[in-house]
Length: 353
Image (cartoon, rainbow, N blue to C red):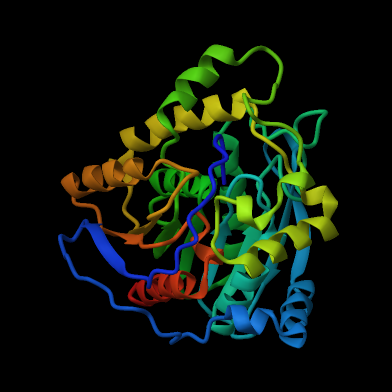
């Protein structure tokens, strides 16, 4: 996730409605309020200490290791492999500042629905290697390295495991990485789902960062080191679920090496350059994909989602796009109604490919 503004998020209690904003199949169906058909974890269960500890215990038994990514950066990963030899698999591509530990609940739910789950911490964040002397700096030297790291992970872990199908689930910055991956590797995934993908930032961000960037990494305007004093739920702009927000912060407090602070001008500039790359290469996508946008988005530019979808429509790409009403950026750790509806649709989509 990425943040320039500190605007208090709306926490209104309106009932969730998911509605189709665009479909690359021109199929303008509307979805009803979602039932918990996949037995996904609920906020009530998370408040039960025994249940919550079960998620923690499950996460700890996952296989963890490192591989060496581009430019000799150490990349941390975790694997949760089902006992079935040919189980379907999901690769999670996380957002900026994020780490595997943020996705404990999601990994738990996906595994319990029959999927092997693979996740790696992107270079420069989580438990992977950093590229600056200040470990809090959100920095990337070459955006392509994100994709190269994922390709290595795919080839050496997922492809080698003989799964009967492999899916991509990407969030925020992980969406920019994932879209680029699909453009460069059209045959690797059976289908892909994108939660609040970073396909654009607020209009002044790219121009301002380019003007202010220098030879050495420097925090972008308004950005800085990880600040525990700014973790008040009432001030957050990413989720309406207080318990999930607090669990995320608790996970990072327990694993302080995984924390990451604000973005540098370098990261913003390289990300903005990547937006152009993604739009210029939509024609290379062959993988069916689905995009989810949050109605109350304050982190990424939702208009860019519509632009991307419209361009994909013109090129006849197999995709769907939905907006989640009364939801913020973190759709995969939102309030139950929004989270369940989003994941329901993701799993239904995956099962169709």
